[in-house]
Length: 281
Image (cartoon, rainbow, N blue to C red; front, top):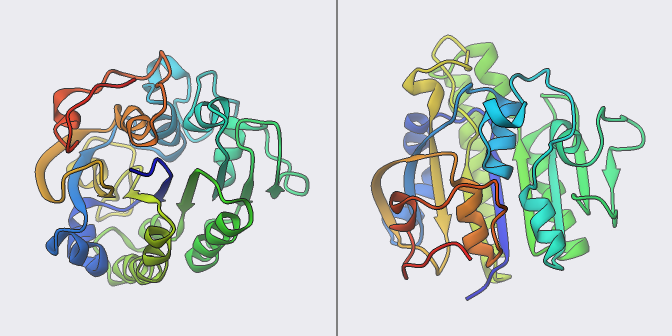
């Protein structure tokens, strides 16, 4: 079984709109090619704190990333650190806050836009800093990095769904249009990634209220989708609401990595997704 992994984070994508709109991803679930479940995000349901949650498995009260204005390097080991320490190659096409968490803070717009073959936690990165940077470009930035450096771990993070949600609300036609666009691009890239032997995970950091907000405790703000295509997991719809905190630990399981000491042990709910039961290494 391959340990190579691509994670796609569609920033601001709420669960109900995802399952109504991601036609290609839902096709894979319906035909038994992918797993789909719901995830309840950590609080606060804000972007930068949840980037840290997804990548380090640590809660806001302990990691110190409390708001989107918490501009500093993470003090915990992330999936980037762990993959590098294991002798793997990693890469990301992401919003610049990811660079600020794991490579350098504050972000230098000229020097840090592209980072290749670095000795930092993120070895290869292409970073954007405008919320309107097209998802089509961003996802192809990720594919360009994949073809250039052949990473074992690739993290792709897009922003247009979140941006349009703030402007028009999480139930607007404009919001749904951006979700459809992301699905169309994934439909082009996913077969390539699978042919190249990657496991693929698609999820979101947080959702979006009908009023165009997130950060609070409502279902619209906290419930997000989780799609996984891997020979290590079951397939089809899983009627679960998974806690988000163990996400990083589960990604370690998929990559065959030892999880960081600060990452939580996988709860049974997450372990039940594995085809062959096994604990974190």
